[in-house]
Amino acid sequence: MLKIGEFSKLSRVSIRMLRHYDDIGLLKPAEIDSFTGYRYYHEEQLFDIGRITSLNDTEHVKFKTLPEVKVASCIIKGSYDQMGEAYATVASWIKANGYKMNGPMFNIYHVSPAQTQNPDEYVTEACFPIE
Image (cartoon, rainbow, N blue to C red):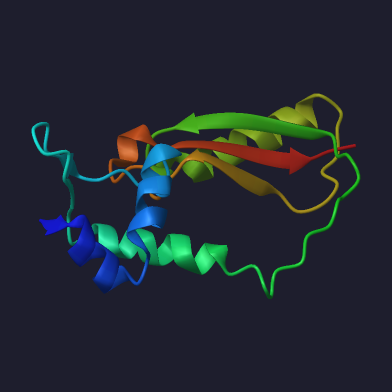
């Protein structure tokens, strides 16, 4: 376990920012001492903070608004092993209901490996644009 100061030095993220990430629920300490209030982090959380800081670098990211799209979707709860079957089910539904696919499918990761290490807790929405 690393104290917040040690974690801050190793991650190159200020203590103030780590506290902010805790407040907004982005990166919670592994443990908070109930007596002292000290925050402790697992070494493995250095990977999480690395992902967070890389996502904060929006210098090379461009945002644009796309037109509204009608989609057929389904929610998959659990491991990604089920994705192929879920995709096939949605594709069958699209065909059976007289729709056509209209563009590449995409996923929305409501609960992903960034939030939990337990694949049984993943929640993914598979979306297929249709017309």
